[in-house]
Image (cartoon, rainbow, N blue to C red):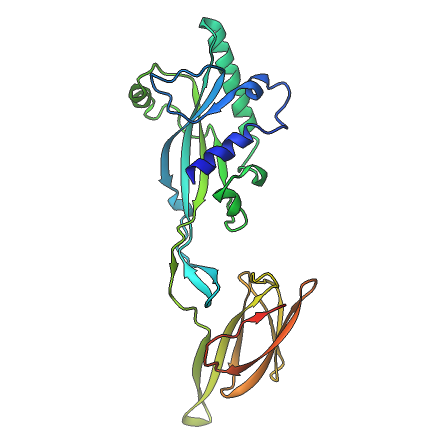
Length: 285
């Protein structure tokens, strides 16, 4: 994942819409090497060194998410971690003395100006796993430029690198790390409830609740689809995960479940309540 983040930032720094006046940034190489005492680039270079990765606990989500599963319809999975990835950005010129300092400062300023335009890494610059996950995670790849304390542990950092302190700014990206830990926990699709009857003490009336999903022709859950059940003539709309619920159905009854959505299609299936398989999904062909 980290190499995909490096490649995404590099692609953003190679954007063709970088202002023409930013000649140093357009001509500079982008490197992710460790800038230690042996680091000596042969051309003007913007170095982004990944020096810290930690979980962003403020964005931690403890709610399980639903993942499509070809065998059982859906499985529960852990939500992704949100990781703060901190880069220290430095500029490296091959010139001498004052000309070197001027070129490095100009490059740093242009890089800061360009990156500060974005609240997150645009989708068209995302690479690999970050591009594949662009529609799965609502926060995307957040980008914060020069918003952390540049003097925090700065002396220890440069001492560890074995070089004199350099002008720098910090780039923080917050990215999702998919744990891909599917759990074999079945989603409840059938609930049977008994309601006491005021006019018949000691007697309870039984109702069945069913839960299912509507899938589009590509096999993806379909949100905001209309679902109707007969003969009860009840109707509902699927939620953001494509799920629908019907309550107070009668045991032993065969129901007809119809799902449709404009510009997608319609499908109807017959279900027994409760179903022996516990499955009430509707797939639109």
